[in-house]
Image 1 (cartoon, helix red, strand yellow):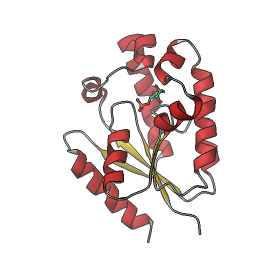
Image 2 (cartoon, rainbow, N blue to C red):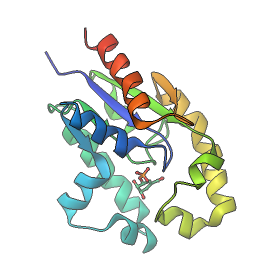
Image 3 (tube, protein in one colour):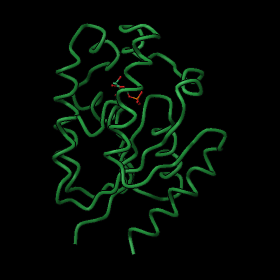
Image 4 (cartoon, rainbow, N blue to C red):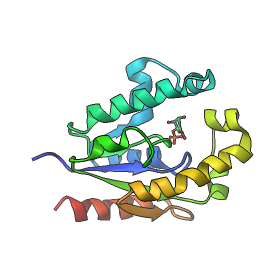
Length: 169
Ligand code: S3P
């Protein structure tokens, strides 16, 4: 039987990678999309997007997703661009994967943005519009939603662990 997976989705700053790290500390097999793509293609994702090659990056994400669905990773942190409208979404059909949306308001996320290429390219107003456009698409794609605002990493991980226990038995 294929191993069950949990995919973490949500906008930049929602904590996908740090929750995945927490899962790793707790003994789960974890894969981080951005981390693996940068290593696999030896690229800096920020530079790639800033140089106008976002579509190339989306293709890399698609390849990444195809390559991990059949593997033994248990938690996958997707990039913020993964949602119902991403070309890779349809690849998930037929696989044992449940998506968890880490939900937060734009206001709370803004405080946590570090170097985000799409923010630099779009400016804050348009980036907010992107957030508003994506939010329903994360909702539609996900099987579970966790609101992350005001919660610690440990608390969020505990909730995700609960989901894992629910779906993997
Ligand atoms: C992106 C989010 C980033 C990264 C890339 C594109 C997006 O991931 O994949 O810069 O489209 O919002 P994080 O969500 O980890 O910041």
